[in-house]
Length: 305
Image (cartoon, rainbow, N blue to C red; front, side, top):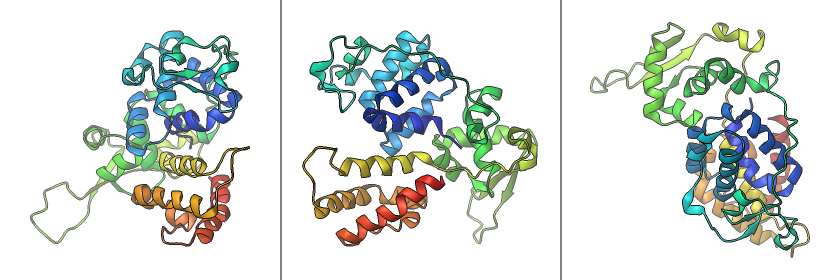
């Protein structure tokens, strides 16, 4: 399933390599940005460090002023106004931009004035990958959507784990779970514990009957929930260690040293989502072994997902 918030955050980095990709994302947001959960967008950015906050603020500034979506102002960041000047697109030097966009320029981001084609289409509800935006279109943009979809594809889950998986505050998820249980479509189970001192409900797990939501996927099994934000962040960090085209090459030792720093800082989060095991990454691996492991496991994982 596509995670729209994680995808937008990733685009603030990888989209800078491809102006056409960046413009298509901005075009889609200008028409359907109301389907994004902006609180979740901010939560994911702050909790996973995914994306470029300056570029995200500039996009939000533009959408708030030019796309008739004032709620994007909640994502703007005044503290990043007049940030150090930089070109939005890596292959487009600032000195070649003759008509800069004023909203992006507020954040020190140079790019030509935005001129969107307006050709983006609505999400195709027939595609199971679009379940997040499909369900949001039906019942509204709220954490209930991610809760339903995270539970629909797996086994019973504790509220705290559900909060981590979906990118919402634990208290928000706990409150919604209590409300949703009243519908009769959200089931609960208490896991037995040895000690009587554990407060009631501390080991409660939640689940739903997938058959109750089969109409969303035309009877197909709903895919298992996947946390895209940490995965995109790992890709972001890997790309940051690789010299851009035309730059001076870096040695394997230098690149692997940077990757070890990333694993030391974010390894626990990557491990919680099974990324270290999937990629066979070990911080203590030798330089050549670490790079070979990434080269052999990361592309197939991207293709499979």
